[in-house]
Amino acid sequence: MNFALKNKNIMIIIAVVIILCIAFAFAGPNASGKEELVIQGNLKTQEIDINSKIPGVVDQVLVTEGQAVKKGDTLIVISSESIEAKKQQAEAATAAAQAQYNKALNGARSQEVAQAKAAYDLAEKTYNRIKSLYEQEAVSANTYDQVYAQYTAAKEVYDMASSGARAEDKAAAEALVAQAKAATAEVQSYLDDATIKASMDGTVTALNVNEGELVSSGMPLATLTSKEKPYVEINVKETDLGKVQTGAEVDVTIAAYPNEVFKGKITNVSQKPDFATKRATNNNGDFDILSYGVKIELLQLDKEVYPGMTAMVNLGMTDGE
Image (cartoon, rainbow, N blue to C red; front, side, top):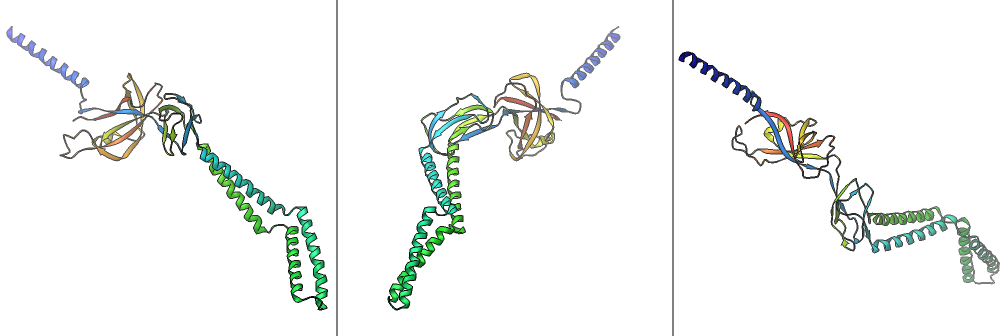
């Protein structure tokens, strides 16, 4: 009786051991000693700093922090009196150069041609009369030379007035017009830069200026943050890089939505390493393990998210330590 009871107890113990082994196999690491590799990271989106290209006084601030904007929306207007003055100077220079070019292109006016013709006719008559007297030795050579010089000059003036400017003069005048127009366009581009516009759809997450404030060129005025194409950045130890394949899809859990699993795609592995914050404890001796930044783009995310949110990335199964 005692022998049968003893055997029954042994069978119960064996059954319990078998059940515990099966439960451990399903609940803990699998039979090959592998476990999931889950790494914590932070959610990020594209950010752009809006800078001033020109110095001046902030005339208008048309947005507030937290406001959603569309690409091309005006955010800030800067007033610059010095650039306005330069524009007026450039426009005046352009008008003068254009007038000079028109004069060279069209030639002298009919009244100017008529005046030159009358002066030339008078000089020619005077020259012919003096020439006849000079041949008769009735006037001196000096008088003849003076009259001849006046006649030659009158003839050149008339020829220029009737034939117009030379090709070289026209080309030079045209070049001055082009130069003046380029200067005007340059100044206009500076004035266009005085109107600060959104370069993408997004949210104004930082606003660094107020109306009436003096700003310098290059000064950051605001920050735009886009909610398009959010991604997660994680640091992966070099000993785990074998689990990272560019283009592979992974599971991502966001702390704000703990009961949902989102799909992500590995889009980039940084080529620049950094020291891992965790020191290796086996199979590597005494050296410090390097880590590499990995970027995971979230696919078809339909939830409201914000930069900096905590996210857990599951890279799959790896050998347990």
